[in-house]
Image: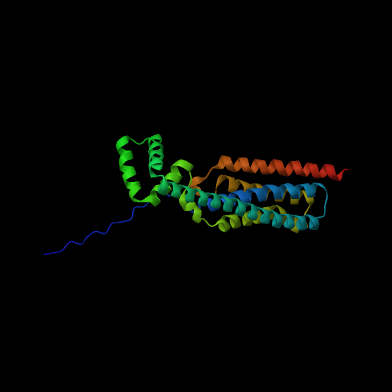
Length: 241
């Protein structure tokens, strides 16, 4: 008599998977976009003012480094402040669940009903939450404060480093043509093209094909073009003084 092999459960594959490391990608887009726009604006202004290429290159590299440090620390401090606030919210909600269970129960019931759950559904959910106070705490934070308890474990250094490095690398794109002895207008055009392509790629999320948004890319590139041309004109005006 043959024995049937038990079929092992197979893990389902998500049809439309989410973007991995979304928060890090957002920091890269933020830092990179700032670096590309500010870099092309600054180098265009110095070009219009007639400064030597060596001066523009040194100033551009120094600007990229300073901007990267500023981006890193501002993102780090912002994220650390968010985490500290979340820790305070966690402690307060945990204390209220322990010391004021009736009030917290009614508050959760009201939140669930607000989200569309019926009376019987609310009863089932509340019985489950009362058996697991950590789950109750997470749900309370998510529904009342719109935050996730898991965010308290997010490393603030990783996001800040991603934003800082992106600023530095993308701002250097506008500086790179000034490292070569080419006509001034060619350097301006090359700097603009490199920066605008980078801005389009960042704004459109071209590196995430399933989230590609060309309109956003063109808008980002347009901002960079306007900034570069305006500052180029400003540089010309200053040189004429």
